[in-house]
Image (cartoon, rainbow, N blue to C red):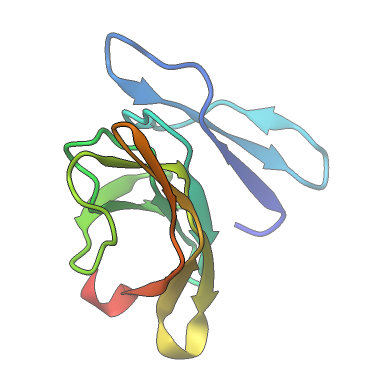
Amino acid sequence: MQNTAFVFGGTYNKTAHTFPHITIDLATLKTSDPESYLPDFEGYTSAVATDRDEIYILGGYSRTQVDVVIRMNASTQSYSLHQIENFPLTPGEDFIIPPTGVYIQKLNRIYYFGGCVFNFFVISILDLIWYVDLADI
C-alpha cells in the first residue's frame, strides 16, 4: 500500500489476547482503526515491508513461542504465523530490543542483525547476522 504507514502495538485486549495496529495515510495524515488484530505481543517488535505488499513482524511473543514471524498482507490486513527454522532464540528467551531487518529483493530474504535478548535474569546482545528465506514461508 503506497503512501501508508503501519504502526503496530497499542492498547492490549486482555479478553481476546490481541493487539491492534493503525494505518496512517501519509498524504492526509488521517489514521484508521485496524481491520484485524494481531496476536498477543508481550514485548517489542520490528517490522520489514517487502515489494509484494507484505509486512513481516518479528519479536514480542511469549517465551514459549519464540521462533515465529508474522506475515501480514498490507492490503487485506490479514496475517498468518510462520515458524522459522534458524531462529536465534530458544524457549525462555525474549527480545528486549528486536533485531533490525532489511529486505533484499534479489535474494527474497530478510536479513536481521543486532538486537538484545533477555533470558530470565541475563541480558545479552546479539552479535550475529541471520536471515529468513521468504521462499520457505
